[in-house]
Length: 422
Image (tube, rainbow, N blue to C red; front, side, top):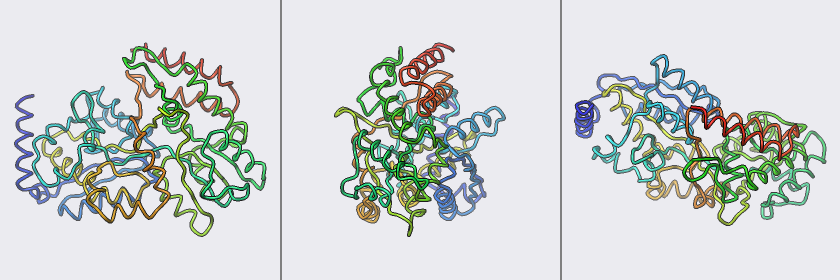
């Protein structure tokens, strides 16, 4: 093992001195990414990297619709020894690959690379993907829970861009009024099937946790968990219970101008602005906070390395530096609603700062930055099953098949059972 690490360190030094050597050999880099909704961004990143690294071909697979699908596809690939060299996973998926010893540790590259491209990476890029002193991923794009409004529909019930509802009671009331307008309009849709991201948001916004600090037991089975499910039930009552659909269907309904309020990730902002052009006006609001100590989960994308040889790891490292560096982060800013993870890229780019300043729909995401915390991943081999159980209960409460109290009991019992099962 020590000999292998020394060879990698030596190879990194060679790359720093002559980064074009690998390109002359015509290397192929295999990359997977989610979600497919951001196809334009993934393609531009790969094509731009190829232009800047002649002789390199990036084979991109971004067919996974969401992070859960990509996690499953990656785990299947590990069984058949066909892992990609680089994969853009959800921020809460890192633990899955660390526990299975699939993720390549990156400190060996971060600590030995003295190139200008390495110096362009801010500390936050590495800290986002760190665990127990080792970096297993680089931060790529930061996603947050936000609220999208169709201003044209909101104006019909007396709201304007300057006085949009910010509290849960007001948002739910507005959604009810829109639904009652008829004409196939839906007032409010709360996304619950994006792993447990929005469950985290409901819990964290109350200043609470999903598990105790020492992870000895869950911590969401009290008043905060009940409050979260009560909010979900109220949303169901004002329309979503009878018009429940997948998040993709909800996004399509919003793009068609028939959904007034949508809880979704800021990463979909460019898509909604494009789809709504010349049809209706979009506004973005902050996620409703329930406590002054409340926080919100930071999601988005992290870049992980799975390359299994020294040569492939070196090429993969060049790609990682590119996508998290100034050029790659500029593409992230323009092609997604994510906030770049590399704050150096924003600080050193007047063009990027202007990009965010001139578009008020980014202001909600920027305003929430001080409140962000990690997107929690449950420990143990059953973390994905726990997530599915949480989503299933949210669906049952949203569609009024379970009461909030009963739903919380099922969620708590199921989670504890899966945590105890090794």
